[in-house]
Length: 195
Image 1 (cartoon, rainbow, N blue to C red):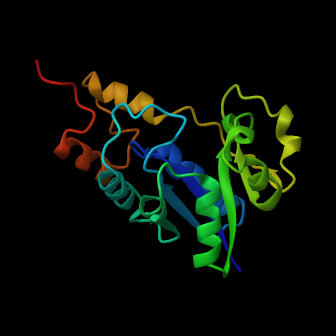
Image 2 (cartoon, rainbow, N blue to C red):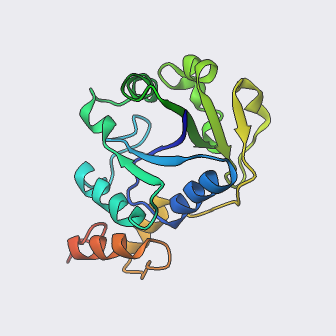
């Protein structure tokens, strides 16, 4: 079985925090591959400055091109919307029976996962790798019957921080992979509206 870590998200945009978490899970949690699953839109989030799914796929492709074990998946873009993790997991298991999938989530999702569609099934049927998020309580980790809390470094970078900073005209090259940053600049994603 190919051990495959799944990082779900809008990736609006992908940043070095995402890459660092993926790298940690690959190297320290014995994953063979890490897949970035692009969500059309998180049902719990406001669309805001969400760029097109195809642009976000390209941003990820550019960010991971030097990492052979990292892949980008558009599976949720081809499924009914809104997209739900439980449906995606069922589809992945059907399409890729030879893979041992592990959901990679932050401790910020521990409290909310019970409200997800099929949350109880996810908790009882799938494996989880959980990484720490600053200031998040892990006391409810016991509800995950098949989870491992990774001793990954705390990363406080968020896509919303990067979007807001770009809107203010800040240079965010230190926070976004180089190819992705060039693509963002070229297309003026997240830039302040002129005038």
